[in-house]
Length: 444
Image (cartoon, rainbow, N blue to C red; front, side):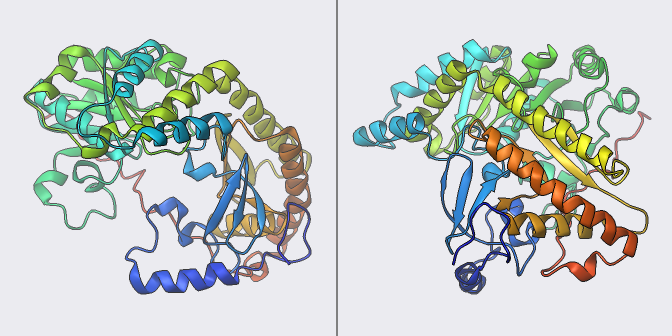
């Protein structure tokens, strides 16, 4: 019998998931289209591998087990699954067609809407994925400045200019790797010491989980402008979540270019590049960045409906309230249990991360234990609270009750040094990205 969202007596049965996984291994390399959704981020042997449907903030796997979802498609489900207003917009557009032989009116209408919302959106460009638009932003920045080097901070997609500086950079020429450099978030001095006339752009996520120090983003914009370097905000996570206009609205810092994808179309594939007209106009004739599906109408219709829903229902404000409830309640619980030195919930409320650390303990083992126990209670969890509009007060209180039951057992297991013995599946794998191997150098 399939598990429901309750304190189940057994872990979910996942036979169909496992069978599909074995079939996939025979024909797919890699097995997953997105690392964060892949089996390495969910304990093999106990976690479901395939989901079949979703509604609101809940999902059902192929074996019929039900879960409250705190991953939300790894970001795009800002409102939730199967929201009627969004689905209706897609269905209405589907009656007329999906992709056409000429441009579609929604391209103009959505661009006008984006310009009203995002502070730096003098011009707007559409594509399909985040990597598309971050790469387009870097390319046009190089063209505009006549420079080659890129300073970056955060995760910016799979294209050569960025992924070459990670541990998965095989297949990328050394010459390209030598043009991109990383810096530590909030380390304004390292950027000042390295910024020179060869740097085309600085691209960063305005925040991930660490909050920007007072004045960091403002000063970064100032030194970039003084150096003739373009500032690019990668707002895949912050856009339409922290505020309708993203981090640039929230922090009052307007970058030269900004990129968006997650959250703007509630799960439909759409990416957006916004920026200064003088820079963006290079796409007209000098810089090439085009894709057949950039004007695909179902995604444009979904985005129009999503943005209208967000405005009507004040979604960023709702996410902040719900996320703050989860974050504050978790941290208070950890404090009450005497575990605040072991675990905490960090980041901004719209998207927070739970950390686990204890002397002599592998953090991934601790996280695996938490994930395993939450799965048994009907909670799909990858270590984050990716909040959506559909998470209910009941969902949140239930999840906190699960934390309250699991955390004391984790504490006891840490003290007995037997956490790994309690695992029934494999330990989670580390994410591949290099985030601390910073390599920008002072000017010579």
